[in-house]
Image 1: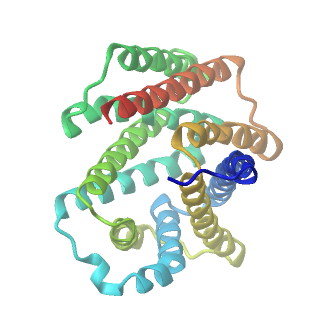
Image 2 (image 1 turned 30 degrees about the vertical axis):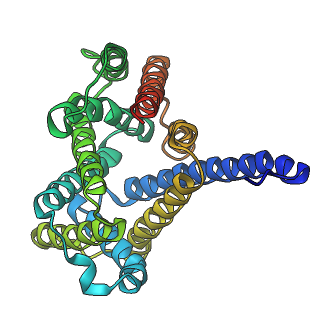
Length: 306
């Protein structure tokens, strides 16, 4: 049995700390890049239909990821024994993207981002019937408290809040939760990440293309640049997020995803004169606390399971 030298014993914690720091930096950068993508959507959204924006997003991301797909085997990467899980992941993810884009156009950026934080709550709930996971009283309690945070954000009865668009965004969070469940399940069944990404990118592009045809609006050069920018920033954000979770543990990395609310609140204030209310920030604080707690409980339960 070999022991580490004193120098290596000193280097190991330093290397771990460096890797974690890079992971945190990557996830913060990913959140900022997603905020930039949302900003571009909001800028062109009033003139360009949602389906058309999603088409450009999917098509550009597919083009950016094509070298990876080709390197992994090209057409062979589409071979799968999990067509139903791919269908669920693709349709749910597509629905989540459509509703998010709609939300960015119709609601303040920070509010859409905040409502997106409900995804871990729905993920916890839906994992019970769909994945057979057991949820203890602590996580169940966190879910209940989290929905109280949602009420603070929505402020039912307040005329300042467009309730229907907000509920559409919440429905989108349910869709993202379903997509995450499908990805989890396929991961456990041995499906490769490249196959999952390839199917979603290709089918998403086709679906968005079909929906965009009857409502197509020919974009100006500036709008075209913004639409391509939506796809490029989305691709960069996905790569940054993947790098973050490869370098750092989810329990350390995931809480920093919530930095997205700071970016969207700042951009919304500077560019669109959006001023989130103290009540909304209180609701965000509750949602963030519950989301982080649920994550740490999942990690703790998983460790005991091993």
